[in-house]
Length: 230
Image (cartoon, rainbow, N blue to C red; front, side, top):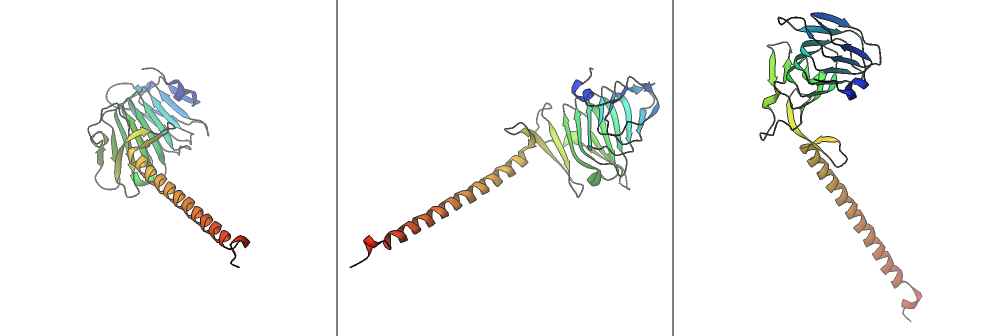
């Protein structure tokens, strides 16, 4: 496993190569937190990393048997997990992550107490065993995101799980629009319908203006001196 230069270059608070059982980190305000090549000291329990200060963004790469507790807000509300195995991400109450990206991982569990309030989208690609674990007062619910993709798409396809305001989870295949921005097939279809409606309205307006011009021209010709009866 190698470093992700793009991910690492955006982070300044770096935790690299730590092997132990527990650690508390306090990233500097407005700086990202980047955790890489960290794992537990033995095989009996996970390495627990507790984040107690606000950070700009969180990134985890090439880690194994790791538990990360986000106890303070992430300013961009974004977290990236890449090339890692058996990672548990605990999002404390009051902390919101609008986007979590999971790439080339196995056994990533995202823990929340209120999925609708704390999460918006989870992107995952070439990953197995991805779960959303909901601790919402009753029995713990584990949602296996691997079973949600439709049409038996290849594992190389990127998927996005959206958590709606009622807690329902919707999974779509990620596609790229003409400008390269990630979206979904459903969003593209909605955009196409909206664009068609706008074009129809525009065409109707052009026809209406043309008809008014034509009627105005005919009225002007009828009232001209040359057309006045003797």
